[in-house]
Image 1: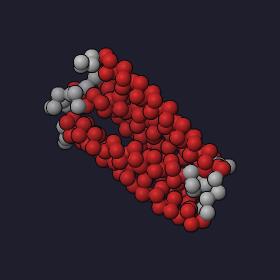
Image 2: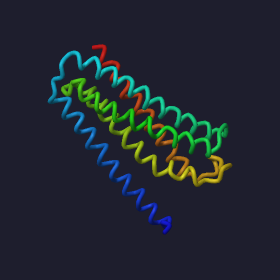
Image 3: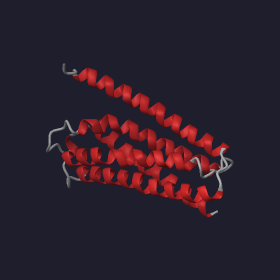
Image 4: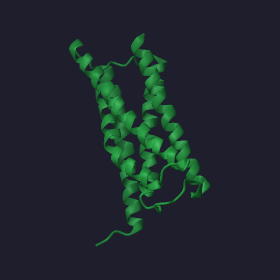
Length: 184
């Protein structure tokens, strides 16, 4: 029995709703654990390594997807290329994010610092934006192979660009504040 398009859309909406809840709960659990745990010194160095490795994996994958999106918008790549890179990079993006949240809980964030709250908010925004983007990236593979970015309705183009901007601002805010926090 094949699913109708409406049934598939409802299933994807439910998955996104669950992902929003799981990500928010994981984010909150990471903060709570970071505030309550006092890991031994030797574990801090390991957690920091995992945190940085997870950042490289996740942010690197996000940059690859968004770079291909930019290439599509400027007609250097096809929508098919963007769909392929998106599918390929989902695992590193989400694996890296899980690594960031898990290791971040062991790094004892300074919750008295307003900058730390900005960083934590940026991480949550980047994560939720990633889930929201799945609404659009799921459609990429159904677009005609030669579809040009400028052929999309203005609302869709605006949404793609706005999501990419939000993603980059959130990621780089978290990276910069994390770097500044680690050097003070």
